[in-house]
Structure formats: C-alpha cells, structure tokens
Length: 254
Image (cartoon, rainbow, N blue to C red; front, side):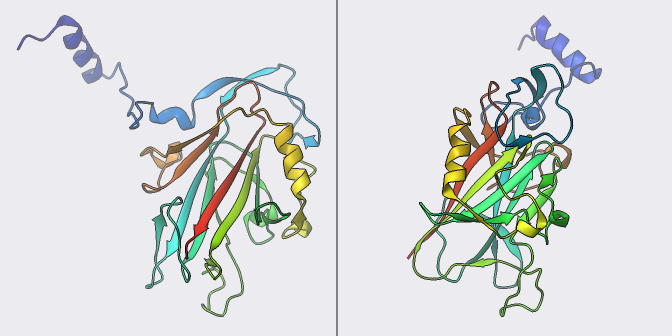
C-alpha cells in the first residue's frame, strides 16, 4: 500500500506533538464544544441585574449557554444509576435530577403541573448555600435534603412516583444575569412562581431553537464524568443568548 505524502506529514506532526487530534462525538463534533467560544451579541432585557458591570462592547466571545441534565434512579440496595429521561417511570420509583452548567450564571428550576403556576425548587436554602448563582462544572442535585419516613438520612432524598399516572413538569432557566422577576433569595426558596412570569420570560427570549444532544464522553475538566444518559441542552442563537429556557418532562406510566 502506498502512503501519500500528506499522510506521512500528518503522522509526523502528530508524533512530534505539533498537531492535537481532538476527540469527536458521534455527530462528528469536537468534544470541546462545551467550552467552545462563539461571537455572542449581548442584549439588554427587562428585569435583569448583571453580577458585574457589563462590558461596553456589544459582542463577547463566550460559549453558548449549555446545561447538562442527568436523571438518577434509586435502586433497592440504596445505590443510584442514571436513567433514560425519556423512558416512563413507574409507581414506587424514586428519582432525582442533577444539573451542571458550562459557565457561570444563574440557575432556576421550577416544578409545576401543566398549565399551572409552579414552585421554585432551586434556589433552595439547603443547596449551594441558598444561592442560585452557579459556577461552571458544579453539579447540583434536586431534591437534595428532605424529611422522609422511608430513610433515616435526610440527604437520601428522592421524588417518589405515586398514583395517579401522569407527567412531572420542570421549567429550567439558566441566565447570564440575575432575573429579578423570579425568586432569588433564600427566604423565597420554595415560593410560588406565576405561570405568567414564565410566559413573559419566554416571550422576551429569542433563543430560536433548543438543541438537545447526548453528552459526549468528556473529561471532568470539560464538563464530563457522567454516563450515557446525560443530555446537553443548548441555546443555539448567538444573537440572543442571554438565557436558556427549557421544559423537562418526566413521565409516570400507569
């Protein structure tokens, strides 16, 4: 077999350490997409409070807002495994969710029934010192602490699927700036959130499309460390990348 000159050059560059070969996902994308900077146009929006004075330039080179979701299921022996978030759960199943972000920002998680007002479950005074400002690659699990008759340890906390069958709905919001129309203080944890507020946030967001992909096999430094059922959710619009809003549905089968 004859090796072409370009192939010989490529091999020599890799061996010599001059060329880094990036691992690829199943979709052919570099696994560095978690950290990949894009030219993002910053937009002024109502009810926002930046953590620090916003730079005067309108365009910043930052990653697109991305959230990692894992659904965890408790086994009979007390251990936990990742579960397929799209598969139905059954009465008696105990589940919880783990969230991680690809950059610093503000995280809100709201649990509600379809078409009804919701309850804030993050921020919570028992998680992250009651703060909803989260750091890149920090993973938070909800619920984290709760009184329960099933287990002596309040940290062994899960949602238990109980009749009737239906859907558990969660609105997840990850924002570059603090959103003043949502609960942000410890004293407000567990408070109600009007469906109207959520709809208004969606109305002012031009996130265009939400991309959901299975998380590639990354190193912990790149946001990895989870198993095969983790999902990445990304706001793909660089012209309006101030927030990421998505609805997560866990189905409780009959």
